[in-house]
Length: 241
Image (tube, rainbow, N blue to C red; front, side, top):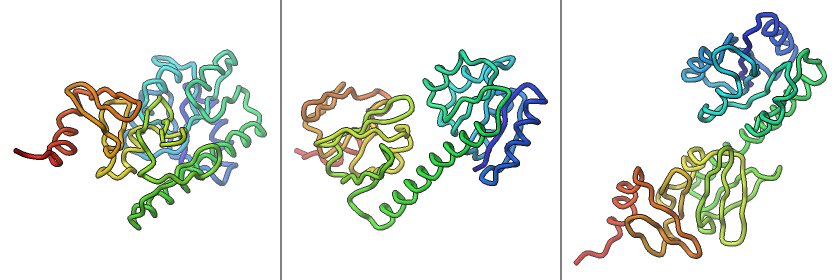
């Protein structure tokens, strides 16, 4: 896993670097003294895991992570235990208290590796499904792979760090964001209709200027998405006079 260290204390970065080098699954590709410099690096490089300090000058690790779009996995490193709750609210992998004990470091990295492997396997399955032109996909949720037929997915609702896939008979909550899942669904069937929803167009009952009606569900049609949705999914299938 490609990782970076973000900490304003040189000695803390040095200690973390020594820990990282002990782990064969980790490859250190960058060290940064604040989140602003690290942010520029993330824009240009692929990173799997960040060891992120919380209390830093300029902007704290918590403040930065809140506004970071599609962040890599994060392990917080801090001397302040009172921030633990914030870490779990932001869906971080783990929370390490300084001075960091090696056994806890190994435990946190192993947890990150488990998540990394799960996401990698899920991506491979999805790519295979798309390559073969199948009518189903798999999602990783509840520590298993769940087979989903596209025809059974009514709509997908986006939350901050996960989505809720509403099927005909169930709700499934994989840990991915709406943008990620939209890239992997067939666009001939699924349409993004606002910031928080993707709908299966086969379940649409009616559309007006503001709302899309599905069975037992009404979803707002976002201004940003309206023109593309109308052109691609309504006008192309409209009976003409």
